[in-house]
Length: 255
Image 1 (cartoon, rainbow, N blue to C red):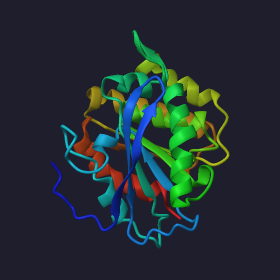
Image 2: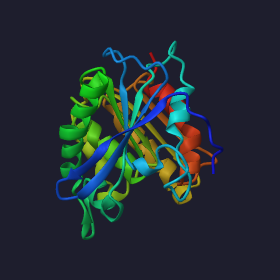
Image 3: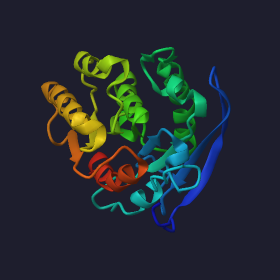
Image 4: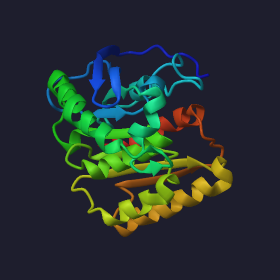
């Protein structure tokens, strides 16, 4: 587990929400960095699997400590974001995060993302006076959440101007994400971060990241809009995603 770091900002509960067709009481939490101005000049980072976003409690493998990573960002070099942690639905997690079917489950990401975009994003923007539109929002996740983040960026390019995807589940839907990325028009505003561990899948994750990275480059992405990282020590767990998060945030929110 990561050592506990004292936050310099503050935590808030945005609410407990009823998600149509996915159950009741969905918790959404907010981390507001210290001296965060509510003047429409700062973005937000929306994160799937909110139980793992902050501290170690609620996560069997430790949290991402996203608040600590955000606290370390410099306002001189980064647009320091608000962090929005959206809890997953437990046994409904695959249904809500998988854009394509996996056997008899999954394939309902459009429904869940419609709720995020139609309910959570407008409420956060109203209450915290964030940068409007795609320039003001990045969507993030790992594993199935990483896949959902990539999908959400292209599905709602007017809402999410960037996708931060760690160890995305690119195998789901027989690799449907590859053709999906190739066939979608490039969003007007777009920045994409992809990573994975060399130890994941016996090297298959690294190979898939290379293929997906090539798909983005063929769409015209250059180094200022795309970062693909392979972690030589990386496995498929929160410990490694937590370690890589600060670098990912510096890229996604750089001035």
